[in-house]
Image (cartoon, rainbow, N blue to C red; front, top):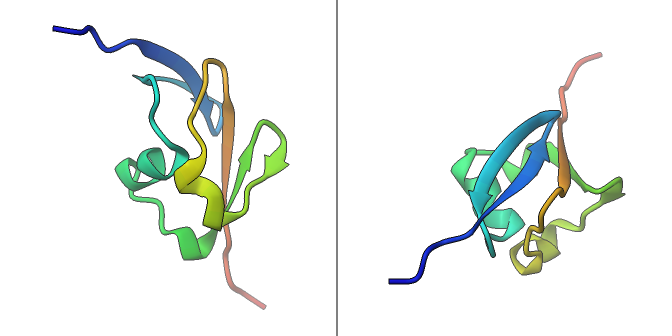
Amino acid sequence: MKKIKKIKIKINGKFSRINENLTLSTILKQLKIPLKKVAIELNLEIIDKNKISKIKLKQNDKIEIVHFIGGG
């Protein structure tokens, strides 16, 4: 049986260990992040939400998730 390799990433300043080869969309689904109400930054670059299912996370990636809050 093949052992699943773990990688370390940082999400909103907190380190997490995840399985290698997970996509950004998989992580967001696991965290129950509503895509319509957030902006996603990966390694200081804003990510197009249409591309999150194609982005595989790598060791030491840094993800910032910013929630939009209405008001006035």
